[in-house]
Image 1 (tube, rainbow, N blue to C red):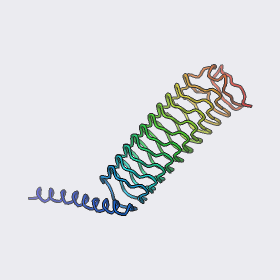
Image 2 (image 1 turned 90 degrees about the vertical axis):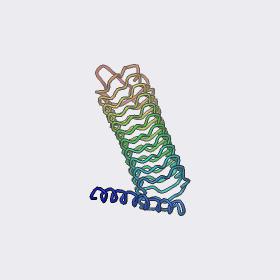
Image 3 (image 1 turned 30 degrees about the vertical axis):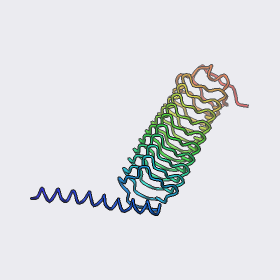
Image 4 (image 1 turned 45 degrees about the vertical axis):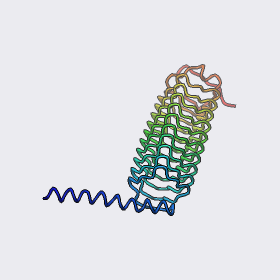
Amino acid sequence: MLRTVLVFSWVLLFTGGAFAGSAEVERLKKTRSCERCDLRGADLRGLALAGAKLAGANLHEANLRDAEFKGADLSRADLSDADLRRAEFEQADLSGAKLRGSQMRDADFEKADLRQADFRQADMRDVDMEKANLGGADLSSADLREADLKRANLMDAIFRGANLRDADLERANASRSDFTGANLIKADMDRIVLRNARMRDANLEFAKLARADFSGADLTGAELKNANLHRAIFKGTDLSGARGLRQSQLETACGDAQTKLPKGLTISFCK
């Protein structure tokens, strides 16, 4: 008898939560507004919700695969462990949103506001974040292989231990960012701004870094084997502990009196 009661209670608890979620989903479909709603585990696959108002909503473990949220307000929303694969978030506001552990392969965040968002341990392979604002966002241990971050604002962003192999960061502004221990093998970082960035133990092997600005950056322990440093700027940069760096890579680069190099290497002063 006790077992029957416990089973009934369990079913009531979970089906009750499902019914409550269904009501909120219907409200969202009709009004495109559900701020601070409880949409945990909701099935929103393929829905057209451009411009929706979902600020502060709880979408933990929700299924948003192939859904459209172009221009939507998802600021401070909880999207942790959610399925965002191929979802459209172009020009959406996800500032302060929680996306830790989410699946978002091939999702589109072009020109989105992602300031202070939490992307830790998220699967972000092939995402489009061109011209997105990721100022202060945390992408620690995220998988960003082949991600598009061209011209993005990455100032003060955290990429500690992130995998950015083959990612495109061309012309991004990553001043004061933290790439400690990040995998940047074969990444396209031409003309990136990395002023005062922390890049200790980052792997930049075969990375494209032509005209990159490393002024004041810390590259202690960074791997630079076969990296293209054509006309890169190293004013006040600490390269003393960098690995794999050869004199030939520095022939067209420049620095200043404060630039620290491995023993035996030299660099021309910037004009």
